[in-house]
Length: 141
Image (cartoon, rainbow, N blue to C red; front, top):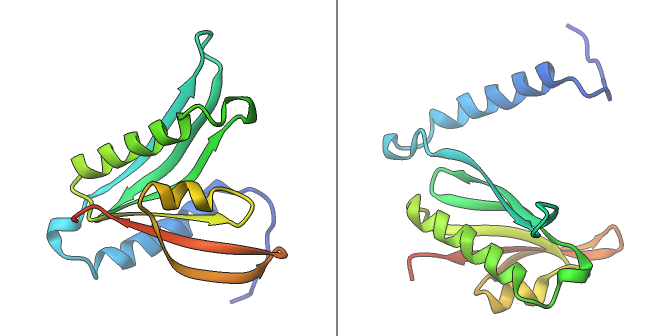
């Protein structure tokens, strides 16, 4: 067997590793949580259908993981981020998630997430010369 480092974008190889990890994980989750996986795509669009922001994430077993939340700079401060996160939370509750999680840097949206009820559960200092925050919002409260 040989070790090969491959930096090209090979979906077949990536999917193999991802699927094997998912298969392994499934052996350790209770039956009632199996099959609870869904990608979440919520888009903010203007009248001309131009995307101005959105949320990308996934419902994974009993949580919703917000992987990306973005609003174009000219549309910030108008409540669109709040509308996006509330829509994600609505989906999480419909999917019977116990919590939502997100990560953010000190130069991104820490205060926004705190206002929306997220709490910091982990911090990594000096991540690209910044502080990286891991946050969670319980939905069962």
